[in-house]
Image (cartoon, rainbow, N blue to C red; front, side, top):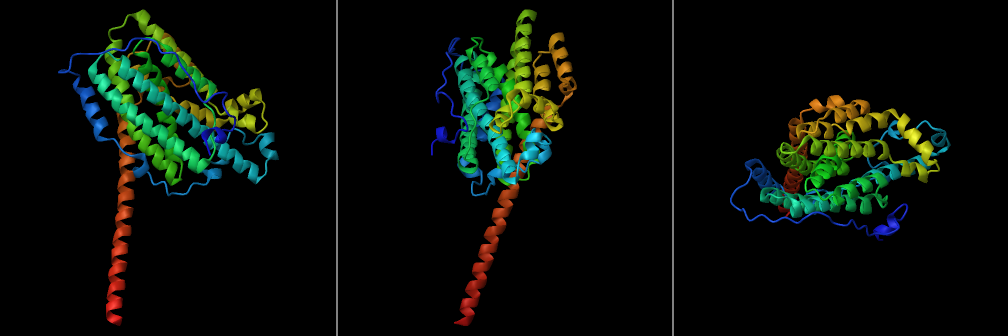
Length: 372
């Protein structure tokens, strides 16, 4: 069955074209580069992995309870629509909610792949091009994994959210070479990283936990790359140029905060869009979730030097200003350690299974020898 047939609402076209702008840049300087970026490039090469092998796709997933999400976390919970639902309807809503969430992850990862390829093309320095090439492969792997999860385990996809598509378009249409960094590495990747982390830490379902942990291990490098590249470049910009980028950040954050709320799912269950928006705003869980979505963005924005008065006020109004003091390096180190711990646990379990098989074979051989 094709993706088109699995969409809850088929998009008008399966092809979206964003006109390219800006220049493709070549660098003939091959001898020098920034040590930190070259070290990150080496790490990007060393940490490549195969999603078909590292992830245990044999693990079962109940599409009607894919993440173990409690009822209270659903925006429709407690409403008159929820009261009318039977157990089957509620299970179907959970399936739609999880499919919507992972569909946006999938679309975002494809956007990240395209943006990373654009950075290879437009970045002026060869060390940045080198690293972006490894990231392009990372993002392709992530899109492959999320697509497989949605096709094989959920058997349902949602189209790209309008606001996510708008932000992707704004990022790709801008001719300034640093904007794919800012729009993708800082905003979209930062948002995704926080969302992945929240679900990874809350779910007790092994397959989505594996997927999220391993993807986050890669994303930790991507955010580090954006910080390094933009921090250096933004030191050279005028106040006016910095304010332009801060306006882009403010607009992007508002888009993600107010419109990435899964109203499309509510509409599929008979809730009018305006009422669905109100439900989303009232949900205490979603309010906390939206706030935590900025736990990676705000400190990164501050770190790269975009911290003007208007941007600070916007973050105060959103209730996320204090997140600017978070320790990004510590968060990224924790993301990497969680993925490595999952690997250790899986390898230990496989070793125990092999030992048990050998022990059983020896016992059966001894028994057969004794009986003869």
